[in-house]
Image 1 (cartoon, one colour):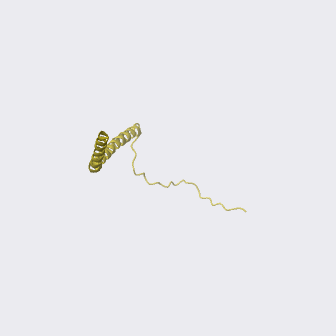
Image 2 (cartoon, one colour):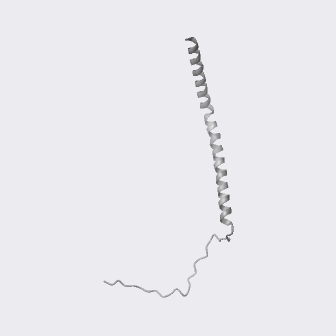
Length: 86
């Protein structure tokens, strides 16, 4: 019975010690892990974006971001107004 009690107390102390450590250092570990994941996702996004830009610009011409205003042509045809027939 004494060895069972000793084993139980050791397990209980380890459990409580780990709880205290995780309570103290848990937020730091999570912050580090989240930053690491964010950097990884950022690298993947930049790789995808650069790959997409490389593919889209190959063999294409430069495009002006501001399109020219539409010019009305003189020869648009005549306006016809239709009436409803009952």
